[in-house]
Image (cartoon, rainbow, N blue to C red):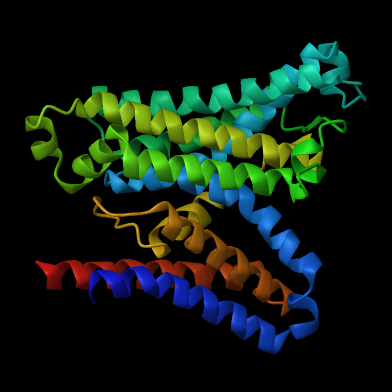
Length: 326
């Protein structure tokens, strides 16, 4: 399989999935409302997948993103509720607190900052303790989820005024979709046209060669995990806005969809290869796949099986292609 064919395969798969659902459920699937919902729901996954793309290009992985999303949503909401004048008794009890836009902006930035801090800690543990990303993020996945439940004893925070990131529009586009476009465009530029992106590819291609070429590998990895964490924090605030509440159970199993989107989009698990265009296609493919299966009334358990098989197929195809190139 040559390079062009590998890049074209995810796009052809997306077209096939859309055509299949259009044939099986034309009335429900082809509606403008359905496509709008899919794009809005894709925004959270796409933003997180942008950060995951950098991580997987370096031959790393982050299993903690689902738990991180829940914790950042809880902490961001807590920050905006306190900034809005709420007391702990009122906040923990779920009372309505009338927040101004400044307090909501503060909470949003605070949630993004919490994500960046989580990513930073993951990066520090990986580089300073010389631990595998799989082990570090498997542990932090449990830590972040536990903190999410401990913050308010397993209860959500109500932020009913915080809706703009879900229902708001900018220039006729849903705010979440516009944020997704901006994140992917900025991440794509960063990856393809800056030293940061070139160093990311170099580390994934051969970490020893990158080190001997003068790249500060440890610093780069910490920056990459911090950047991915910040994007997860942003996705957490969009998720919170969508539900008008922060749920400690948010994002359970979400890491599967994020990793699947990046790998299906052509990012190699062995590192050194991947694009934001591919990640966008992979994200849309997963979203449309889940959307069609839901319209066909197929259970989420079956959806997990299908997505798992797709991941196995994508990784197998990548390994065969890599061996042939070698």
